[in-house]
Image: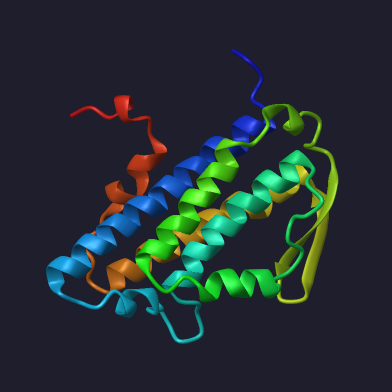
Length: 187
């Protein structure tokens, strides 16, 4: 068996997570149309008042996927904080179509990542944003396992939970199926 690389530890997971959020967005659109509920009710929905809404969860899935790929490839322009560009992108997420567009653009970034740039990045030292005015310095491997992937999954599951709380009929299989190669799932 070939060595398990940093690329293997990140890119397939980012792709699956982005495909999962696309699947959830499709289910949300179908439910909103069938139930005759304005989509805005879901886009602005929160689990609790001090938690970010659905649109932010979708945004953060995409941001984390891009940050993971950026750090793994040694990109210098990985967002260090939540700045004006992120605020603008988030403000534009007012429809399911805009969310789909953001996710698909992020998928393009992930799919276009250069596997060769991942070589020898595991031990590279980076500083990343851990929250408002909080920064952590760690290796890329520590970032991936301790923050990047868990945070990306957290926002995916939170989006799922918001949908469930609003009555959208989604289940665990809807969330997890994109993580499997379709040929692995028996009928």
